[in-house]
Amino acid sequence: MIDLDHMIESVASARVALDEANAIHANDTAEVTRLAGRIQQCRTRQGEITSRRLAGQADEKEAAEYAALNGDLDVLRGLLAEAQTRANQSRPDTARAALAHAESELRDAQVQAEFDALVEHAREVERAYIAALGRVWNAARARGHRRTFGEVYSIAQPIMAACRQNYWEAS
Image 1 (cartoon, rainbow, N blue to C red):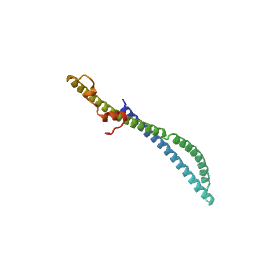
Image 2 (cartoon, rainbow, N blue to C red):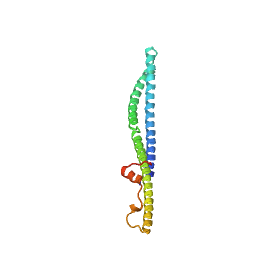
Image 3 (cartoon, helix red, strand yellow):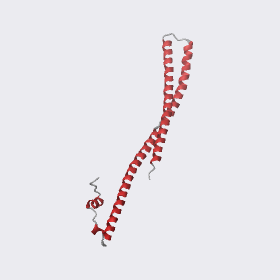
Image 4 (tube, rainbow, N blue to C red):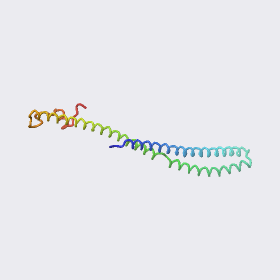
């Protein structure tokens, strides 16, 4: 017997794991974006200072700020590289694949369960048919017939042909 409830729980757990992985990746990606934005701000400010210096309007404070921005950029680039590594490592690909696998197994199990139910229904009908044939045989014996069942009741040819040839016209 297939345990569909367990498979449904597995799919739900895989969805939760994917949601958590997506949240972690979103945070890591947001950090990359924040650091890239901060780097761009530093470069923009350095560009402004360079423009003022070329125009002859720079002062010593801006020269010190330019040097500090260089230091900031070095640190920010290192932080950005680490953040990009974390973002790449936190990609939810594994969780996404696990969910797809769990969903696929659930679909396969549902198809198998439907097939098993059809087979069980056919077995129930088969048991009822055999019981009915047994009643026919008992009635024939009660009337004094003692030879073979085939003389009393002939199995319908469409049933025999369907079983022998795998041809199911009535499907």
